[in-house]
Image (cartoon, rainbow, N blue to C red; front, side):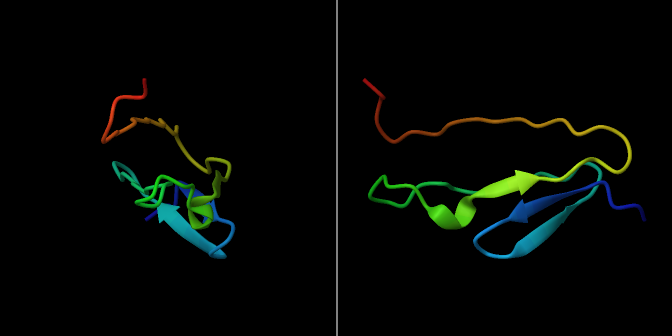
Length: 64
C-alpha cells in the first residue's frame, strides 16, 4: 500500500501516516479555551494523488 502524506506533530515528535479516505481529527483548545501547543502540526508534501483538506469549527458558545 502506498503512503500518501504525513502530518507532522512538532511538539510530540510524531508523524501520522495518511491513507486514502482517511480523516484526522484533533482538538486545538483545552477545556478552559486556551490553545493546546501539542496539536501544532504541519503537513508534508503529497507523495501520490491529491490531498483535500477540510476544516470545521465547533463552538460551545457563539463567538459574539
